[in-house]
Length: 276
Length: 276
Image 1 (spheres, each protein chain N blue to C red):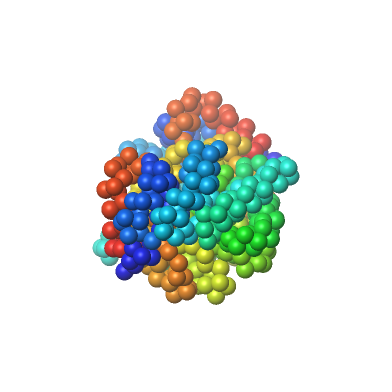
Image 2 (image 1 turned 90 degrees about the vertical axis):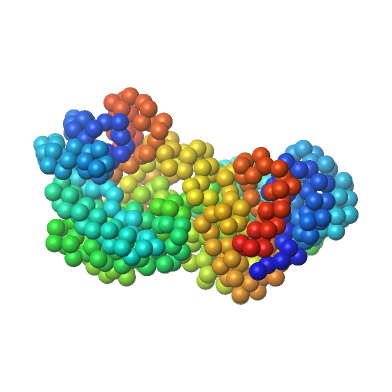
């Protein structure tokens, strides 16, 4: 069973809390890390500002496995694609300041660009960020998203497809973040995770659960143990592949956000140990 | 552009109409076929009874590409799995009476059975039906379902996975029905459809569209041309693979079911020609 010393929680999991509250509560609970979403940092998204965010995080003593979420590379217009690359470079700077190991890439998709073309644009976009990532010492982790997000969030929907982009870009700073929610259904899951290990490309491991029935495509994720995913089984695959980083709890749930967040954090910690 | 003489419509697409109304309206519109869902036939689901259904369909002159939907093989209990096989044999009998070419298999999934085990149970269930299918002259078409249905509807979520079951069962009466809604996101789609053609396993082709954003996991399908799927592009792949059957319009949509069904059928016919 995993211990809390191997646990990180995404700020989006405890969305009602501000960054300072989340960090102090996580540290007090014995959680080892926090993965930070940009809305808690960037003033243009309502965040506290980078300088303040850095102070909060450093003083909390928490590790920061990931800064979330870069990507969104595809666009019909080349100018828009350049803007996206610049935005990702800014996120790499912010991630470096926060001491984050990696920027998680939700690579993007737009209905106006066919999926195969979008996948090419994703590889081009990531390639354009690699030098900057290396300069600031922050990794780029492609997160394959569930195929139900292929229309407008991510044209990369399997680990195999993420690995193909990694092959294309071919740089050790580019790897993959595996979220059980997105990949649990994949009949090829075990072999794909093993391949990521062999390629030294397994950068992140995100946990939550798939609620049955799922009532909303985006905001109805479940706490580990409340759904149908064999989270512990997937953790074993990830560990066999050599992953030794923090497991990141990433749950978007209108139901859980409406609860008392202290009670909820207690349950998150309990379930991380007992059901992930 | 496809013509209405190559079009069939599922009874579930025009759910508010009874079987007789659907058949007479489709025939009057120049549509060539109707794929019949069991709820319009079986008295235990509110249908008109098999004898009456057969009369309605035969007198309409419509072809019947598919009887929908068998499958649902996996279960933790072996007795339940035997009941599922018997139910599928009954559906094969009903399909034969209706003159249906194939029974479409939504293969099933239950949270209590791990996906890999469920896939084995699916192959066993189909194998147990093959002799009966041959005896009554009705094909069995595995329909891979979108991965968002992996928890409770289908453990077969890609064409590749369906082909693996076909390989396991290894009988020419078992093939695959390709629905654009379920497979459009697959980066390997073109090669997989081509493989189905080479294996003589491409039994059905279903069309609709993916609404952006999709508001419900089950009942928010779009009319061809109203979403982001390149339906015409996938049709070309299917035709290159040698498919010469009817294209089946299968749309579950609370929005469209609430509309005037005559107007809606007009649009279905128009879009089948212009956008599929």
